[in-house]
Length: 179
Image 1: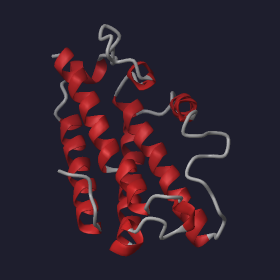
Image 2: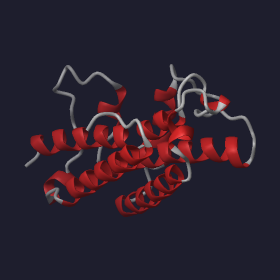
Image 3: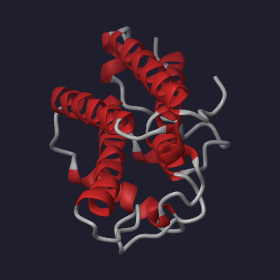
């Protein structure tokens, strides 16, 4: 599906990719669930996330934490009227890898079931939040000054459908390597 350019497509892509991800996870074998992710033999997998995430819990927590960024971003800027950037002040788009590692470290004692529950809840909250906005509010560049030069919908696409697609690809690759 092409990148969403309206609210209906955004909701559909977020919902569809969420369902695909949850179906994929539910169909994993016990071996696939219990074998740590290991992409070290593939020299093309150089990005930090290939070595960071070791299991489904890590992937779900990553998605959950990015949902929290989205929820906080919108709440701070719309409800609380506090001008807030998407990333926490100590990070930038050049250093967000360190933020992702901080999220990973924060949840090493979180169980898979807790991660699944947290992710399911945060997904529902983000979808409900998307539904509060109009097409114009979501997909007009610079509609909100706090979204910079882009549109709010792009943030939602990145934290839902696109991020879910990333998770699906990663888990599928793991499943191909572990029968």
